[in-house]
Structures are given as C-alpha cells and as structure tokens.
Image (cartoon, rainbow, N blue to C red):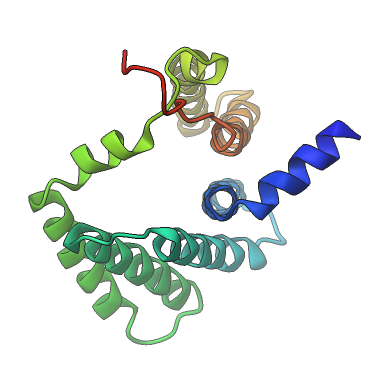
Length: 191
C-alpha cells in the first residue's frame, strides 16, 4: 500500500512525470529498434508512442522551468524537431528531411552554447546512491552483450539473436530504472 501511495505522490510531481514520459519514450524506441533488427511483427505503435512521449515529456519539463535561458529554447527546438522528424519519417510523410536538418542546426547551436556541460551540471544526482554506482557498469555490460550479439548475428553463429535481445531489452530496462535515480538533497555538499 505504501508503494502505491508513493507512486501517486510521485505522479503529482510534474518533474517526475516529465522524466518518466521521456524515459518511457526512449525505452519504446529502443524496443522498436530490437523489433526492427529481429524482423518481428507488431511494431507499428512503438516509434509513434515513443516519439510522442518524448515530445510531450519534454514540453512538460520545459513548462516547469521558472527561468528559461536561450539554451533552454534551443534544447526545446532540438527535441521537438527531432521528435517531429522521427514521426514524419516513420509515417513516410514528406518534409521529414527538412525537420531533420532543422534539428541538426539546433544540435550545433546547443553544442556551441555549452549544452553538454549544462546538462550534466543540471542533473544534480546523488553520486552515493546504489543506482548511480551501478548504472555505468551495468550499461557497460549491456553494450558488450549488444556488441557480441551483433557479431554473432553477422557471423550467423548460434545465440546471436538471444544476446541481441538481452542487450536491447536490458538497455530499455536500464533507461527506465535510471528514471528513479534520486537527486542530491539541497543541503548536501557536492562531492
């Protein structure tokens, strides 16, 4: 019962909801990639739902910021144009290339204005938490499993499909679990 109460309280937090939507969208796109590589059916809604969740989640995140800088507007343009080009490309609608080129312009502007540094500073994660300590090693193992699975698939060796499936699904689960990484408390000093 306490878990449901905690989950309900978390849903009332717009920041948590935006993170959850974005991470769920990323996980759906990862699973869609697995379905595409493995030539499995029933994947039509995965990319549309994934891109849609990312677009809506980032709009929530942008809305909740009280002070918006030029970098925030550039990041909004980058995310939303990338989402739109993904939807247009998947639906085979005309104009997706123009949207992709626009997203590239926003990426370049974001890089020039110091976007990566700003992103990592804004995360403010608790580096002593269990999830933070184990997230990079687990992701490293998943990348190795994906690489070995791809090699096995290329060479037509057994277990290639199994390793690829474990790697892709593990990465999707990792993205979702990392959503629950706790931020550092405000009274803690940076380590």
